[in-house]
Image (tube, rainbow, N blue to C red; front, side):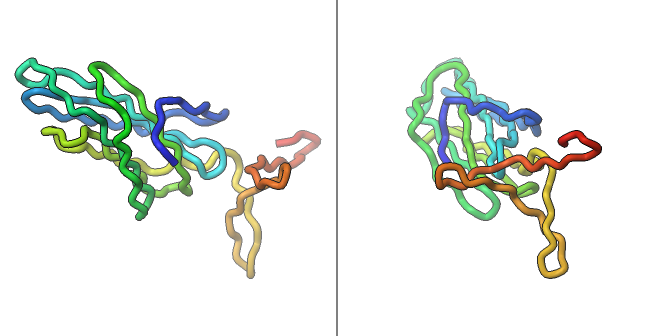
Length: 168
């Protein structure tokens, strides 16, 4: 789970959702952005942060050297990433993580040692893609993940059922 500037491919049935806006400004630098979340396969999700670096209130541009990016999942504090250079204009970042449906995802974005405060956006992890499979365990129905072992590695699988001669 790390930040990247490479976009993952969204699977069928997934879309960017829960748009959030962030912004901050100082005398010599400002930034603004739009953040989104989408579901990937299995329990994976992706956050997209489109951040724009621009002139500050005085019309001057003295940005911090690096962006500060962090994604917290539920009660787990993420690792702060300060590896990306700040440049004037828009840069899009992606964070891929894992969370069940409904878990709080908190994203913090800003500049390293910047006069502008780090901005926060909070999302709710989207619903898992596909149908939910339930198994009865000790008399109680519980949701289950469908997995298949390929080459010795367990991978997410799609469960299908034949209804009236048609696979669904």
